[in-house]
Image 1 (cartoon, helix red, strand yellow):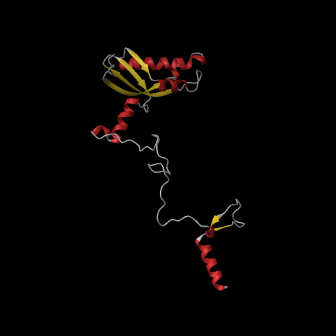
Image 2 (cartoon, rainbow, N blue to C red):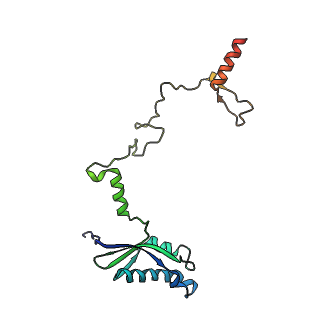
Image 3 (cartoon, rainbow, N blue to C red):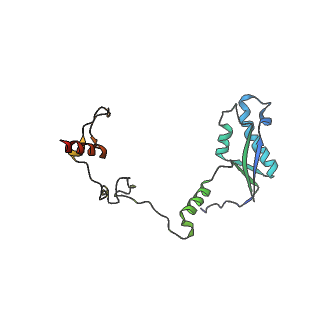
Length: 182
């Protein structure tokens, strides 16, 4: 089967459609359904379209508050193709194809450059923040050393959690001065 090509867009407009006048005299349960029909009628009248296709996100926006409380007006983006079919969506709605194009432009893959793949570890998983590409732990910087037993003191009243803490440089200097006096 051959892939269907999308017809070229002839016109594209952004409309604010008043919906309240469409459902004001109808029963409460029919209000959202009347709003959907009002969008279809408005677009077919203004774009001279043979058929109107409403996007799922726009339909969800019309039905978001339930059948009884549709929005009073809604802003839509309508486009018509060469066959006379109009497609209606929310102005902020991005299709999957448009999103792929934007992504490829950001990566630079559309200009003949290969796509950049993320680095993977042993089993094809992404590296964890604390690991290197070989799967081991990263090396520590040269100036940094692990605290020894002498550097650790028992917590006093200020540490209520318990456990051991490293001595601060100020405390080490105070202890050194105190030992010199003895």
